[in-house]
Length: 372
Ligand code: SAH
Image (tube, rainbow, N blue to C red; front, top):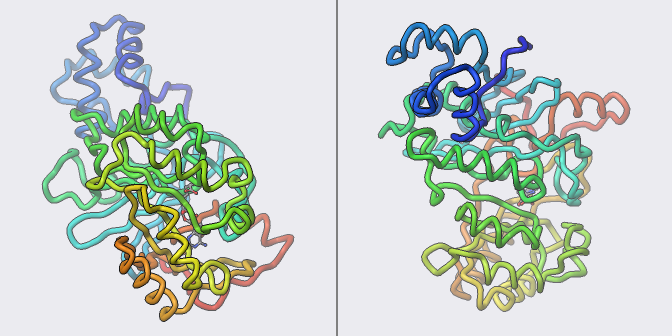
């Protein structure tokens, strides 16, 4: 990739003002530039028509607004779209867009790889390579906006309305960069996606949860997946450090959570593992004093996993028990399975290719070939 030009994406407003100062421009230039970068989505300084020509050429001499390289873009038969992005150091991460009829959520990654090693998650089989920077996190949204031509920001007909921090990695292990990126994303004169349309998912990094609520005020999702420490220790190993009781206490204390803004508990339905009637009843008991709702995720298979998805009948029955206990528990329709874009299926292709050369796993039955 290019050049020694400094990329301005991911700088906060103060940093941008300092850059303007460094090239001998007044601080208010930063405000104008911000609007072009994040509201208009312009990548070419020469097209920033409200700026003086001399200023535009100075910008082009020093800076770039280049996006990460899109190594691969796949669109599922169900319209979900996945981008494999290659960053300046050739590391890669994926983001996924899940369109509905009149809205859509972009699923953003926070790390290359992951340290959590959750037993049923494909990303968890890839070692952590590094945290993503604020620029790399914000750029995922900008690439998606480019791909759907949804500039300028805030158009009424936009499809990309929501963000979920549910891609590769654990966002609360990379809090500083995630927070910086989300503040840029929430800025009203820019990308302009409000905190009410952003959900951050954590496997349960308890010590960071309060700060996340205080500083960002985004919706919280928690990857619960089990109702006992015994099972959760195996499925979500961070539980050994922060057990269920501690996790639920942090949920109760999460700033801004109330009955109108509930915490989402994600629960992957694993056949014969966590899907009994007794499990459902125990969940109701566990969250009785938390403003909670559930999201039941049919397990998404990946090459080499030993887990299987619960049957549709079992999932319906499980949901009904939760509903009868007063809990909302929609079953999340799997999206993008054919392009390995569904929950827990993300993994950078370079890594996948490397592993497959040493361990030739075949994709499991319902994973159809990718469609370009
Ligand atoms: N590290 C964060 C963000 C990832 S979110 C977290 O754990 O919350 C991705 C969600 O998909 C998590 O709830 C994760 O547990 C779930 N998941 C992982 N693998 C899955 C699979 N194979 N099928 C269904 N859900 C899965």
